[in-house]
Image (cartoon, rainbow, N blue to C red; front, side):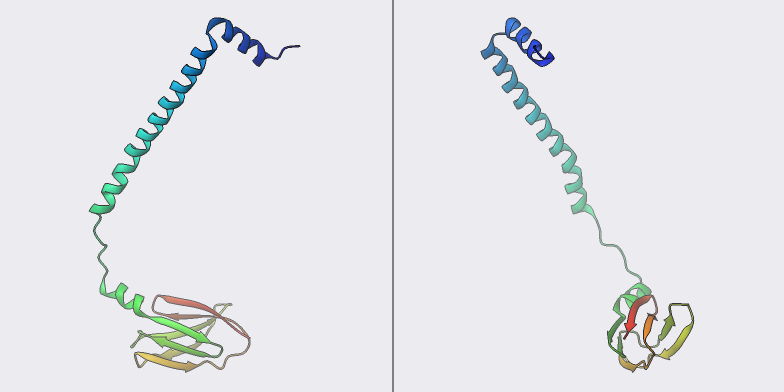
Length: 133
């Protein structure tokens, strides 16, 4: 019993000679390849042009100060740098402020002496989650 695809193939062979059919297939492949290439180039060109025209975003002084602040943790010792004049807040996961420490120098080392648990350290807009074991 012939499948539907086989019946279509036989009808196609009767209507179009086999070499002509392969030429049509090759022509369609080339045409589709050219169309896809053109579409890719057209859609990619504006993105590349826009990338060259973009200006760097202006950074305010407050944002620059927040970017410079860094919190480094090594077990119970915390080093805060770039946050002179700010305060370090140590908050438990329940939301209770455990400690508040003023940062006096450009790079200050602080011993936390906290019980085991997870805490959140906050200096300005810089926030770090730590785990004391």
